[in-house]
Image (cartoon, rainbow, N blue to C red; front, side, top):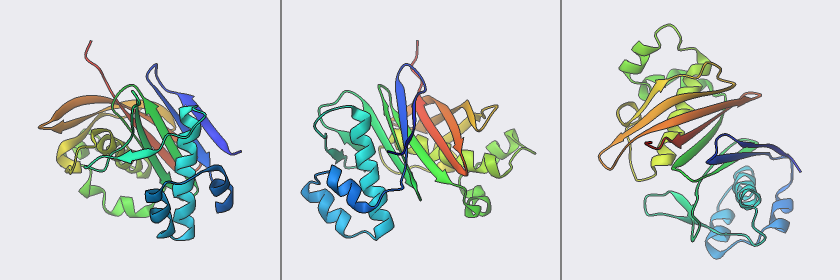
Length: 215
């Protein structure tokens, strides 16, 4: 089975990555879908169906529970597991899916290298951030900004945000293949600092935003 990563990035958070090499039938044999999942699944094209199923299967493996715990979605669109004390976040891109479980607010993003991000970087990197990292904004850093802000957005999980204003990166990792930087969410209902853990696998960028607790 292609579970390619299982890593505890802190005492509070563990993430998992699955490389999809199976046919759709493999996941359907492993999962019993509820009514909502079945209706949603049936509307997707084949590649998206496999991503959808692989995410749910990986989440089941990540929980370590014998019986599958079904995913619920809040009114703001944030996924959660009922009657569980931990936070979750999911992501998928092409042939990889990712899941993180944490005792803290957490978000995860996995993104295959996409030339489009270079063209639209001004929509999610602020002028202030461009100034901080002047001369360092190469393609890898652009992808890190995107993934980190997607992860912050998912960790916040309480509605619309403006990526340039409400989500900030304040320190880049020394190593974008395996490092940790800092970011923050700046909203009326949440002002919080986050560790931004980053990884790179082949041409995929992974970012995990984990809330820092005040001591």
